[in-house]
Image 1 (cartoon, rainbow, N blue to C red):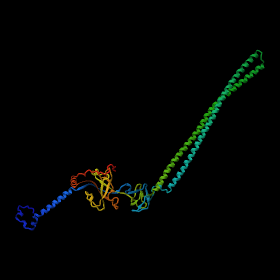
Image 2 (cartoon, rainbow, N blue to C red):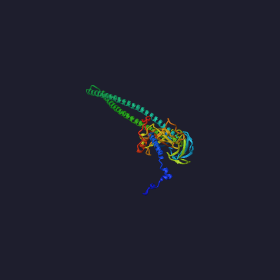
Image 3 (cartoon, rainbow, N blue to C red):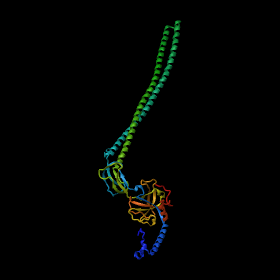
Image 4 (cartoon, one colour):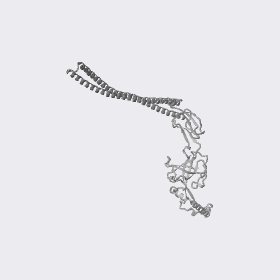
Length: 450
């Protein structure tokens, strides 16, 4: 009754006469309820003092421990067109097995004999290099011969020049002797003229001395001509030395010019040979790239490019492959506020999606279906989802992870921290405080965070 009227019904009517009123107003049930409340309070008080393991929960997925064990896509470094597939999706391939064959789409590589023709060009250019080398050797021999010949010619000209100088010296002595002879002949002639005037000598003697004087004068003129001719020969010898020097300098310079031209052509041919060898190697490597091979053993997941005759660019994804051998790990994410509580080597409980589990977050020992892990890497830069990435590896001291789980499936993680009473945990949760700062004694805190 709402008792909104001033007439009190319970005061005018005796409710105890009714069966329902008798059951309601009996005092007997209060004792049992009080006992229940007392027992519940005691149990609740005991529960509040039970230990509770603080933890940091996170959500992630299964991955591999090392990057080379993760699923990958195979790309082609060159553009091409699909010609033939050698595998199907789900096939197992060994490392180096051919997955598909492609063909060229660039016109400069259409020639099927491109490698052989380039090899012939290399051979021809190599022969040209050999020819230039032989020409260089011949010109070097020619320059050496010209140098030796120049030396001999110069020595010959110098000898002739020395002979000319000696002849000038000899002719000059003869000239002085002729001058002395003419002086003597003149005195003898003058003395005979005087004696003839005095009548002591005959006219024939005078004529004889005059003839001798004239002969001596003629010899003087002749000797003077010889001396001048000898001096001229000295000048000619000097001119001949200069001429030989100039002539052989010109010949040697021309031979050296031809030598440098041959060397330049040789170096240019060697550069062309090197360039052709580089092109030859590139063509060989490009031909080997026409067959897309498996980089490692694994299973073909998905053919991204399909069909025959489909073209693609360099770097396009062609097919996905999952390595057959891998070490499982869990990639989880934690909030920035919880990052200081995460340490390398710390124990973590993991619940895998699709695996039956009964989880008590505060009591990991009584949980069922969870597996142990330990932290092996902590990312030092925040991810795009606003959290920090943590990598977990299986705990060797715990139960092995299930063999049926696959890379990419989800997982829930709980990083175990300090044991506290339940009342403290409730008080912390009500106040929004973070978990207690915790650093395990066996954690490798000195390790590098990745």
